[in-house]
Structure formats: structure tokens, C-alpha cells
Length: 126
Image (cartoon, rainbow, N blue to C red; front, side, top):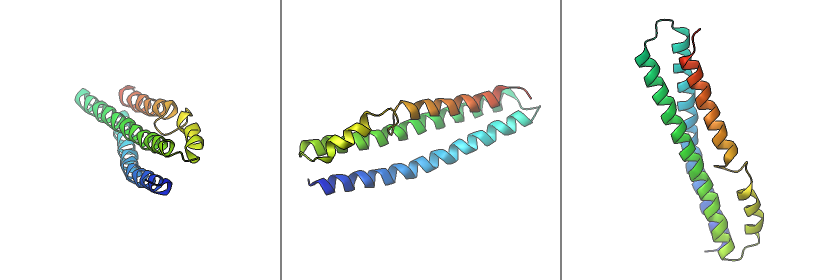
């Protein structure tokens, strides 16, 4: 495969991954709305809190998965570029090795922060 074909396939993968990410953002927003409604309702029962917590946990796991897929798309493209000897592989490898890359530690910590924030809103008293 030529360099432009590998880069094109990578971009197509990123487009698909971005669509899933938009869905995860919407579900994250919904989780915050659910948590806020429970926080503002003094009569919210424990079952509603448990279901909201489970929903937020599933969204966090799914968002983590979407980010890991994005990282795999980038990593596989870099490996393929290296296999054909493309000069761009070295430059892109620097991005793959960065902690700020797609699916990296920074994004993982951010997802955990969002989850902790949602659970804190859900289980704290007003």
C-alpha cells in the first residue's frame, strides 16, 4: 500500500471514531443531567442513584474504549508507514509516544475525572 492510501485509511478510521465520540459526549451530558436531577431532588431513592451510577460507569467504559480504538488506528497506521519506509512514520511515532495522544494516559485520566465528578454529584447531599 502507498503512503497516501495508509494515511487516507487512517483518516477514514478517525472519522468513524469521531462519530462514536460525539455519541459518548451526548451520553456524558445525559449522565450529568441525570446526576444533577438526583442531586436537586431531596426525595431521590437509592435505586435511581444506583441506576444513574451504572449508566455513568458504562458511558465511561465506552468512552475509554472509543479512545483506545482511536489510538489503535493511529498506531497501526504508524506501523504500516514504517513497514514501507515512509519518512512520515518517524514524525508520527513522536505523536504516538506522547502522553497527550489519542487513548493516552491524559485522556484516560480525564474520563476517570468525569466519572468521579458524576458519581460525586449523584451520591452527595444538597
